Image 1 (cartoon, rainbow, N blue to C red):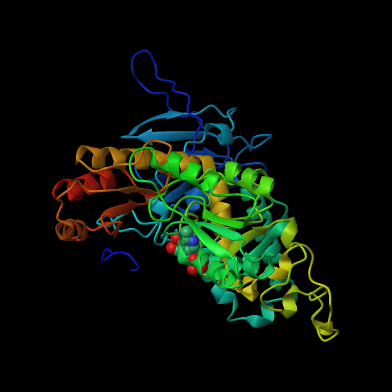
Image 2 (cartoon, rainbow, N blue to C red):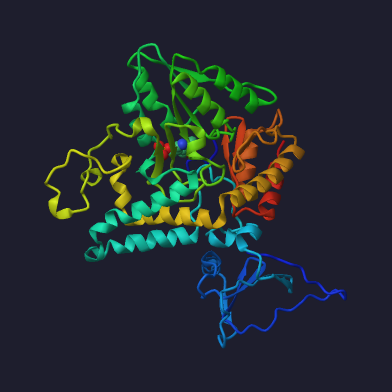
Length: 486
Ligand SMILES: Cc1ncc(COP(=O)(O)O)c(C=O)c1O
């Protein structure tokens, strides 16, 4: 174990002139903003007009860089139109207003949103995701509300949770009635263990070295006469493909439940959720998936996976706060019994004057499994802000950014003689590498520490987890640190 563990916008249409000069932006008569994000200058017109792009405005405002308003508002355009230009090294081109940002957006490095000193090379989001400024600020605003309880209304115990549920539903393609707000993966796993029917000698299938929160409750269940079958990782080439095959062939008519991770938490090995879900359906087994390491990055579709439970504690890949996550629960858990009987999760609890008219019925959908912490003004605000930021960035864009960063880091490791995963076998944001035989692991740990390169070293393998704040300099520093020790 390492000392670290546990521890453009822009639709651009180039309008260069034949003489090599760049076009200058035309004179604007509508409000105009200019900001600097990293080495890019981003300008936009119409930011305060109806229909303008709120996420770009937020990006400008949250960049932590100077944003100045220039231009005048003599005559606002009939409809808001967004002009974006990108300037690099004092040369700029600018974009046609007719191209919609959603189709043209390419996510660039978002380091400006994070409190990451330049000397820190953080490649360890699989341990703890650094919380970006907009999410921290949302949390701070939520916390400050607790100083003024007279301003907190009964609706505030419910409405923010519903807003978060809607965003989660969008992210994983699930109806809001199927989403519970849970305090941890362990909690949601315990919900399933409490409700799944199990007969003696049935099997519970899990992966080798799975995260413990997705193990201990199954052990408790197995004590009732069932047995746990652990599917080991094969050694050698095409490890992910062969691990998936082993997993599928271990599911049979005597399987009561299969519990896995979207990507293995130790090395990012991806599992074929669609295929496992289908096999579970064929044999009638329950299917439980922990998406903590990839939520907001690798696509996750509750409908397509046919899972009984999809769970995520979003403080890693989704960069949210710690202590409030979510679970999608399928039909078989719609009428189950929760772990605790909270006043808030009963029908009619919105009417605080009638709480002692005790109710037998639960709140609709799977809200019965919600944690009371969903009403924590700070936690729910951070979760919602994280979901909003993810939506603004767009998950496929975050995935593309992380995949490119991973590909470059893997290339450095390959050049340094490391054993690296094959393309497509690991999550975009998480992979494992093994140093060449004979590497002095203590020296490697020391070199990483001195270079302030944060990864997780476990046994003879290294887990690397980049995110949207990593850039070329981080790749360079990683290469230097691992390349110097063999
Ligand atoms: C795959 C996975 N699931 C869950 C967790 C956290 O579990 P819990 O939410 O029970 O604290 C981690 C933390 O490292 C993890 O890697």
